[in-house]
Image (cartoon, rainbow over all chains, first blue to last red; front, side, top):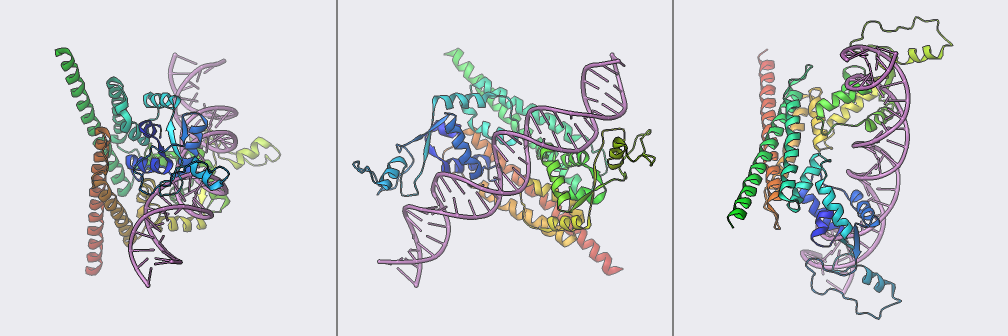
Length: 201
Length: 201
DNA sequence: TGCGCGATATATCGATTCGATATATCGTGG
DNA sequence: CCACGATATATCGAATCGATATATCGCGCA
């Protein structure tokens, strides 16, 4: 959420849609997580509600309050929330404090689960090249270790369905590992290229 | 848990270990889920605590209460819980009601997430062949649909890391689909073989 | 013209889950 | 003799989920 808001102000519903794109339908977050999380972030000062509407494509015919409507409750709500032809929306903007928190979360080595990895990868362009490489290497180490555990034959007897499941899981991990290796190779190549360019310039 | 207990009585810690084997370290359940879940299942009558010890390898030197110890609180606890050289353990046995619930859960088409699928596959040997095939076909349909959504190009511009993530996800889904197709082919072949055998006998 | 439907949008509830922590026992090795 | 790690049960607070409630808007269609 902080990553998305660091690009531009957005409202809850859009955040959810974007996060579902990044994380997939699987791993996606629910409204029951989203809105409380927004409230927590606002309470902690990482984000703040914006009254102004810098948001996306606004359909023509938007209602714009023309002032001198005080006392009118509906008008007051229209002034506080953004109306764009849809339901009233609450948009949020990231604060400096939020930006600091975002950088911190992006850099911390903890949170090695699939979800955190997918999320961090989607925003790792905000990391400096060495940090990015360290992030990918950390993932590689995790997968290597996981693969090692998955490769060793089962202790006890298992039926053929479970065996197939375990074998497939090991293959999937290998697949993930190959992918990370590719990302790392690309990253190294690019960083080398940058350095060479810098030296020759 | 019901599936594991339908094989033999087990205690909580062992259930967790077995489930972690099946589900992987990822997707594994925590103690904070395990023990409350056991309590719920016992409350609902699906499982019951066993005083007797039919459990695994018991180290020599086990303390066996020799009766005529009533009044002794420690002895009473020893009678209620099993001591096997480790800490006192509470073993559970599945009831007939629990067996019915297990069959119901195994058959119900809902719960399509990765976790439920892995779990059901590990116990699908208890399903009848048509039910097993239906279960696999359901999974196939889900993955096909997911792949379709993942294959269609992104609407908006995305950075190369996110694009790589999305591409990798689509490949993984394809990989999963290939695996399911293989399982289905095996299943069909076996069921055909069974029928032919039955017809020729 | 009006009316229902699906998409957009915010919010909350109860049940469940997680990660951390507390507690205790036993076997092993130093 | 005692520290440590594996075994084992249990609970707490915070976060998450899936379901549900509510409301608005645009579109199609009778």
